[in-house]
Structures are given as structure tokens and as C-alpha cells.
Amino acid sequence: MAGDLTEGEFEAITIIERVGSVFSLLGSLFVIITFSFSKAFHKPINRLVFYASFGNMMTNVGALMSREYVMQVDSVGCQLQGFLIQMFLPADAFWTLAMAFNVYLTFYHKFDARRLRKMEVWYLLLCYGIPFVPAITYVFVRTESAGRMYGNATLWCWVSSGWDVFRIATFYGPVWVAIFITMFIYIRAGGEIYKKRQQLRNFGASSSAHDPEPLTDPFSSKTTEVTVTTESAEQGPSGIDLALLGKNIHNQPKAAYSVTISSDNKENGQSQQGGIRFPFQSNVPPTPSTARARLKSQKRKANFEANNAAWSYTKCALLFFTALLVTWIPSSANRVFGLVNANKIEASLEIMSAIVLPLQGFWNMIIYMVTSWEAVKITFSDLAATMAGRDTRTSQFGRDHQDKRNLAFRLPSRNSRKYLESESMTELALEGGASDPKQGNKGLAV
Image: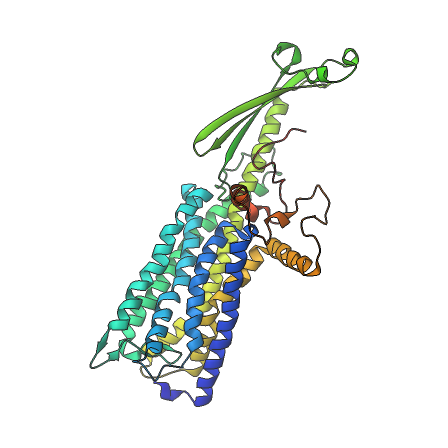
């Protein structure tokens, strides 16, 4: 089979594979380092990219070997390369399926960030465990007629042409099953997303429009219910009269009504209640319609934020799915050509496969940076400031600005770990705007 390519074409394939692998290795290292040392990158979808990056690195190690051992099929190098390609190259498709499955769990089973994180153990076992079984088995398989299973596969040592059926059954077949399942999830979820976003757009069109049902926000793990109650100040003798704390109390006008704010914070299945009463001076007595309008506005805002968060997660996952198609369509076309035209090689398809297959880690890094661009800018800004000897702890935007440098490139303390993890869950939904980290999920009355 290899006789259909010239020495120049073989040399071009080797160069392309190694250059692409270097870019992917650097990309994977960027993902692993920034995710490990900066909590600003800890979005739910980035956690899966982090796990996938280790598989991308192992694929690139195999791709860097290129055709070095294709003529030495019994060598340790050839068998190791075949194992790395068989195990870690298709794992990237399985991680993309895991991202799509998170979308499904969020939309249809109301999973939040805490429950999604529990799924990661299963994702690790399945995404790396499933391809491990055939990958390690093929190292020990050989027959008199077909020889060793891992051998010359043109681009590198992998399942040789004498075992073509196993290339489809245990490599391309599972990859395309994962691609079709992923596509089905996105098509189904797309209708749900479109319907919810249309409801959001119709808010301003009709004052009597029904509030949309919120999609579960996968980026928060706490729930706070706030109840606002108004009553006449004279009817509530148990309230705290803040006017008594000031001077000239005899000259202070008496409050027309009081406002009681109570919260019910639900965390880890426990409920904590608390409340405080404030007297307010107002010339306009509250009406039931005003209270209902205010609550309706707050509900719409909460629904909008939850739906926007789910849509942001889905957009990121769709980008990874697009990169998956770019990776696997050319290489699958090459494999189909080889099956239809036995013992023939199309140089252009081989070169296209050599271009796209080693670049998985590079594409993942690009999407990782795009979806975490605010964190990327802060990280590089901090590094530049550190090299220049400037203090990175002070925001250049003033005291009232949410400076995300506290989430940037530095090792976290144990005391701040819980806050940083919960805050990072909302990062994707905020996309450039952030609430005061001291507020968390609590409400403030002004």
C-alpha cells in the first residue's frame, strides 16, 4: 500500500504530523497549567476540556513519532505508538459527547453544577476506559497470515491494513456513534433553546405575556429565596426603629410603612432563615399591584440569567462539536476510500488526515481561550505586571469595579477554595460582567 506515495510525500506527512503535534502539545499544556493554577478558568465545560487535554497530549506523543517505526513492527516503539493512537485519539470524541450529555442533563433533568461534577468520574472511566480495552489487547494479537495487529498504517504505526475491519469496529465506528449521538442531543436541545429564547424576546412585546419556564442554571449550586413584605409601621411594634439610633429623634418624621426582608438560604439540603425589618419614609403607600410587578420583574430577570447561562454552555459545547467534525470528516473519508479501493492510497486524503488528526489539542485550546477570554486577558495582564514589578492586587478600574484578578494566576488558599469554586460556576453566564464576590447569592436592599 505504501508504494503509492513518493518519498517526498512521506517526508511531507512526517513534517506535517510533527508540526501539528507541537502546536497541540503547547495548547494542551496551556489548558492544563492555567486550569490548575487559576480558578478563573474553572467553568464547568472547561473541566471536561482539562480532562481531555491529557488524552490530547498522549495522542501528540504518538503523532510525534510519525513514521519512525513503521518498518519495525516488532519494536517497542511501534507497539507503543499503536497503543497511544488507538486509545487516546478517539477519546476526544467521547469527551465531546460528555459535554453534550451535560447539556442534556441540564435541560431535561435539571442537573446543577454539583450534580454535573459527580458525573465526571463516570466520564473519566468511560472516555478512557472504553478505548483502553482494545488498545491494550491489540498489542498481544498476531497471526501467521496477517502478522501483528499494530503495524504500518501509512501515517504511523497503528492497526495494519490486514486488520482493516477492526479499524472500523473499534475506532471509526465508535467515534461516529458518539458524533451522531452528540448531533441528536444538540438538535433536540436546539428546539428547547430556541423556544425559551423566543419567550425572552417577547417580554417587552406584551405586558401580559407569561413568564418563561427557566432552564436550569448549571453554574450555581445555591438557592436563595427572598421574601419582601410591606406593612404599616404602626402595625408592627416588633420592628427595629432605626430612627432611634440617630440624633434629633424628635424631629424625625415617622415612617409611613416598614419593609421586612427575609431570606431562606438552601444549601446542602439545609434551610437557614433570617430577617430584619427597616422603617422607610414614603409618601406613596405600597399597593398589591406594585409588589406583584416588582416580583414579576425579579422573576423574569432570574429566568433570563438561567436561560442565558444554559445557552452560553451550549454554544461552547457546539464549538467543540464543530472542531470534532473538522477533525474526523477528512480522516473518515480517507478510511472509506481505502475500503472501497483496496490496496490504494490517495495522497491528498492522507495529507489531510495528517493535518487534522494531530491538531485536536490545538483546537481545544483555541475554544478554551475564546470561551474564557476574560480570564485569559487577566492572566496575561498579571504575568506582564509581575515581570514589570507592578502590584497586581489593585484594580485599574477603581474600588467599585469587580476585579477578577483575585481569580487569576495564583495558587489559592484553602480558606478561599469554596468561594472560588462556587463563584466560577457563574463565570460563563456573566461574560464580562460580574457581581460583587462578597454578595454571593445574597440580595441587598438599597
